[in-house]
Length: 170
Image 1: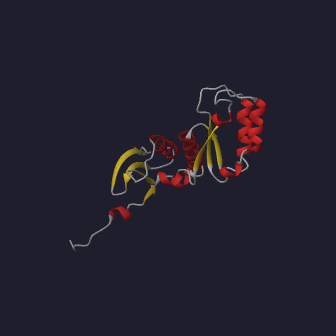
Image 2: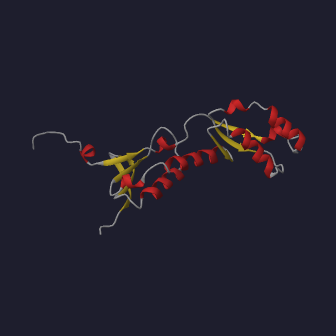
Image 3: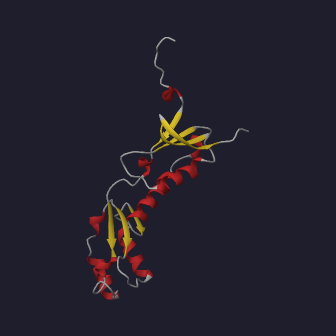
């Protein structure tokens, strides 16, 4: 033995995917219909339409918007449609739901940009234990995408992984 230190991780041909790379970029903001309701309870069509016309929509420019109503009110379908028709031209993304639903939608959209064939018969590590908290569904969705093509899927860091899936030998 010559005392040479060999970095086996660097030689392993592992591909590391960091879930953080697929999360929403940019500012996230909530658009709550509550403020457009009479006494924050009742939608009056004439007042609602006027409020939509005079609202400053530019404040949502290039932002990810979660569209919701935080009070228990009956919101007609057309009201959601009217709100999104004003948000869509300026916002980066608009999703009906809370911030979590928005993050999930953007994550799903971002992972669909991956070409699974690039991971065909590759050993893939889905990075974990980072500084940014990642919700469990993110790991599940990446696993679902990669399992049909990857040789193996692991969780963690390249130097310390937990095996998740290994393709059976043919």
